[in-house]
Image 1 (cartoon, rainbow, N blue to C red):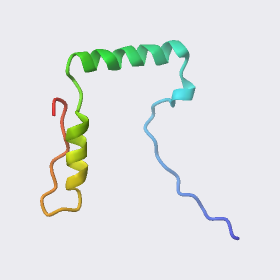
Image 2 (cartoon, rainbow, N blue to C red):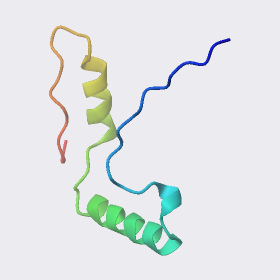
Image 3 (cartoon, rainbow, N blue to C red):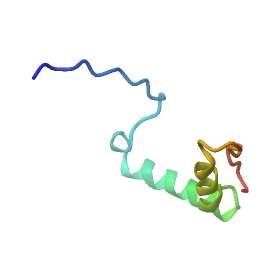
Length: 67
């Protein structure tokens, strides 16, 4: 079987989880939990409703923080 060329994916210039130290990972986790405690997140329900609207005649706008 012939090899296929794999398209190059341009990822953001952000390190992967395996490129970070344990201290950096803990700091990111703590920051994320502070955001959640402050109410700065998008609910699972809002994301599911948005995804379910894809391909319909009336797709919903992308959910925003607080939805």
